[in-house]
Length: 355
Image (cartoon, rainbow, N blue to C red; front, side, top):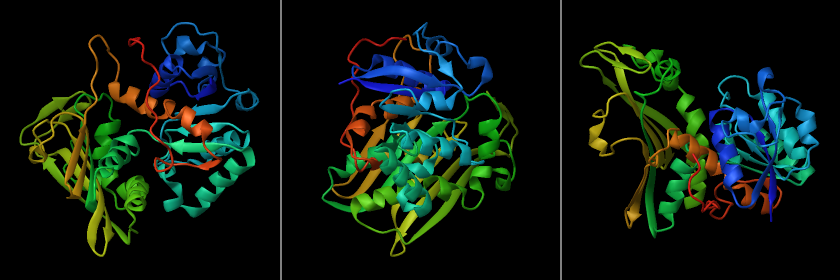
């Protein structure tokens, strides 16, 4: 069966999603929404650097909602920190129109019923009204943390705790956004937005609850903590200059407590130098899931580029975590889904890579 897909946005990750849709044996691209006026009416393939496809992007949301399609690949930038109301409204309208959604936007939606009952009820009602389903994946929150941990849990007989990690060297990211977000180059952690009280909980709580439900426990309290590394001498990265004595690495943890014990943990290691936090024994970028129990299980996930590929492999993985889920979501009963509800969704593109 072929599923007709509308791509919602044409940015960096969306471009990889379009390539993934084109290469998937069971998917057909039938439309695309573009945010910017200069993209309106242009060929989606040309916008994504893939050559003409005969599918034009549009800013007309109502026209897209009227387009016959089975699913929308929703890869809007994660502006959830600001005002998500307009984008959330778009999601509701899409679902009410009868179209399923695979979504990368807004971390809460990874497992919304665990954190915001009103939001979950709105989504669920929209799904019931339209006979549609929605799932939110991505890498973190998403497959890199929760998905990897669920794979590890399949091998466990007893579970004492589940610990999920993301490791990222941010030295190669251009622009000031990452630097400001983590407080790199600052002397005071108060200048790091991610370390403001409650921010990491807001971002990761749904992942904690998803894993807690998976192992059959109820989180009683969520706590945060962090560790910083400082530059012993000045150095430069793609985003700018890091003076001596300023923040060069951030390691933060969000813990779901049961009986006062950390049962489920998400930890991020965000750094600018490879040797920071070397005690964790993970080189490069990637993800790790650790299950303490019987047996003890550790799974490491690393994402790399094949020879000849010049793009961002993490962007490809993020995009494909939703593109590959399209057939499963379209086949599911109406409602709000999570990784707990779907069987595995492997790639359906056995052809040689097309760069």
